[in-house]
Image (cartoon, rainbow, N blue to C red; front, side, top):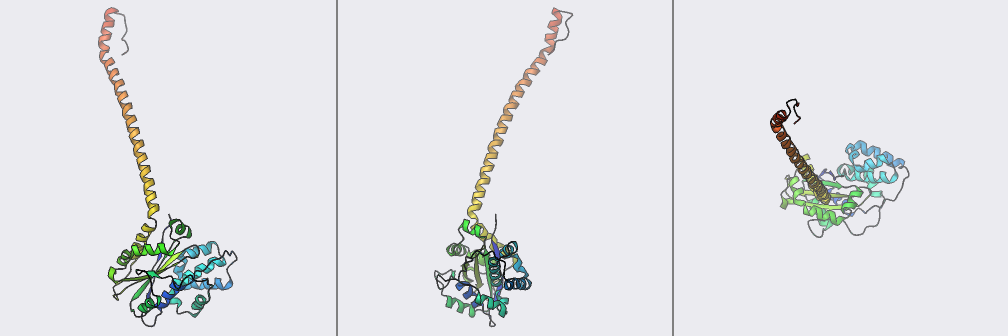
Length: 299
C-alpha cells in the first residue's frame, strides 16, 4: 500500500519576509491543466532542473522528480519544477530567476477568488495575509501528497475531502507541533495537479516561540493522516486477515478432531491387541494339553 508523502519546511515571519505572499500564492494559484506532451523537455527546463536539484538536493526525494527521471517529458518537467519551487519558497523569493518562472508559468482560468480553507467556514484572504504580516514567529508549510491513483481511489482528489480531513485532525497536528489547540492557526489549499495531487498547509502558533517540530513530530503527523486516509483499506485488510485467521482456526479444529478420532481408533486396536497377548499363555496351555506336539500359537 502506497503512503502519504509529508514535507514540513518552515518560513520565518518578520524582517520584511513575504510569508503572506506564499499564502496568496497557494490560495490563488490557478489549477494548471497538464496536457499530454511526450516531447522532450526544453533546454530551459533542463537547465532549471539542474539548478533546482543543485540548490535544493532534497527535491530529488519528490515523487514528481521520480516521474521526471522515469519519463523526461515537458509535462513531467513542468510539474517537478513547480513542486520544487513551492517547497522552497523562502529561498526562491531571493532569486529573480525563480520568481520570474513563477510569474510567467502557464495558467488556466480560476473557478473562484481563492481556494484557501481553515477552521472557519469562509476565509478572508486579505485578513489572513494581514495576520501573517503582523506575526513574528515561524510558520510551517506542510506539503501533503498522494499518488494520483491513490487519491482517486480513496476520494482525496478534491478540496472538500482534504478540508474535512484536516479539520478532523487539526488537534493531532497541533500536538505534533507542540502547540496548544486554542493557539493553533492554519490555512490550506488543494492543488489538483499532475500525478501527485497535494495540499499546502500553513500552520503556526499564536504564541510566538511555542511551536517546534521534530522528526518525530513529522512522523506523528504522517501517521495520523495516513491512518485516516487509508482507514477503509486497512479495515478491509483487517477483515481479510480476520477471515483468514477464522478459516485457519476452522481447519485446525477439523484436523484436531480427525486426529482425535484416529487416536481413539488406534487405542481400540491397541486394547484388542493387548487382550490377545494377555490371553496367549492360557491359549497355548490349552493347545498343549490337547496336542503335546503343538507349537506355540501366535498371539
